[in-house]
Image (cartoon, rainbow over all chains, first blue to last red; front, top):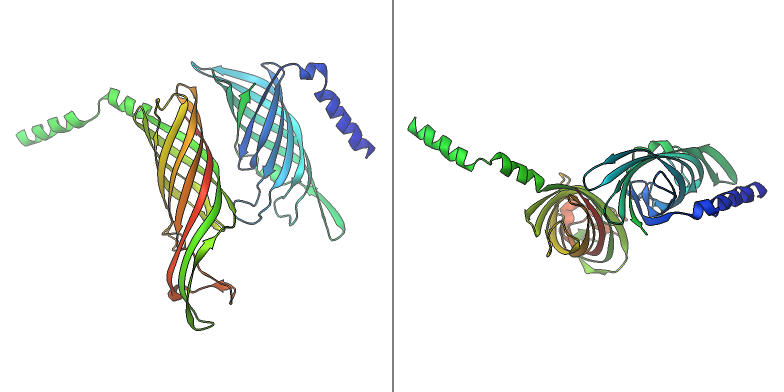
Amino acid sequence: MKARLSVLLAILSLALHPDACAGDLSAGLFNSFKGFGISVDHIANDDIYNSFTVYADIYRMPFGETAYPGIKIVYLHYNRIATINRQYSTYDIFIAPGFSTGYVRDFEKPRPGLVTAADLSLAVKMRTEKNIDVEFGFLSEIGFISNSGNGKTQVGIYSNGLRQSWYPIIKLMYRF
Amino acid sequence: MRKIAVIALLMLSVLPTRAESRRFIQNLHPVLEWGYTSTFCAYHHFNYLDEYIGFRIDDKGWDYSYHSNAYVLASIGFDLIPELNLRVSSGFQGIYHDRRVVPLVGRLSYYPHCTWDDGIFVFAEGEVVLTRNDRYRNISGYQLGTGYRFSLTSHSALDFHVGARVVYDEPDVWDPLEEGYISERNIKLSNALYFALDFGISLVF
């Protein structure tokens, strides 16, 4: 409990640090075959931004195997590695480490479980003359899932973190 | 010989020039579209012979239970004139509880300002289902809607749209007494209509 509180306080102190609060905000929609949700990006400068996403994990929903989605929270720290300038738009390529947690279903596991994972994302952001950014990306997760059932808790590898790496993600963000 | 020359001249006259071909390609736009379908009511009319009780059953009525579905479509749009766009799409779509199809959708959109300017648009669409499976063969859908286009660049846009959809289906008939589906040979009539609101997003390039 103490360890969890320490981690939470550390994240909060990072998020509320005066340097972290400087910069612009953008908010929008997270769309993927993984699920649908909302994202808030804190843009520190042209090279770096932090992204917080909460989405409904729809694994097994499209084919009617379950009626209830899971929930996933993802934090990513984006670092620009390249820029392509075109006549009417700019494409920034980012690499983003981060972490995620949530309560989701996993491949070949009967029950949903608690996930904790380290993440890596590769994304291309199209900046336009308007306040709308379109981001295309992919997200890989390596972590663990703990399932409880029959009075026992089992911890295993979170398979979908890698299996769904090729699912494209489109984020539609509005810059404030 | 003269005939061949005349035919060749005629063919040359109707062949598109390089500029026309380029204009045609410039008017073609790939589109990614996805959305949420909220089915709020359905009507059914079934007429079938129930072998268990030995009577013909005529069952019709409205069902107001709510169903959530979603769809993902990939499309090609073509600007017929600056205000009018024709789009042909296919993908994966849920139409009702346990009914998922691969549709072929045709949509005509009218942009009062211009297809590539910010502004409101209206659209009408019709769809059929691409399948060889008899369970899904006779499904068709129609939608009327409106939306708002945000032009991102001179050749890309983001659309948000909402539409009223009705889907015609000929579903399998569930027998509540035997807890199984009625055999097809005992079904005289199986009609259903699903009424829904669609909320969608399109990315146009």
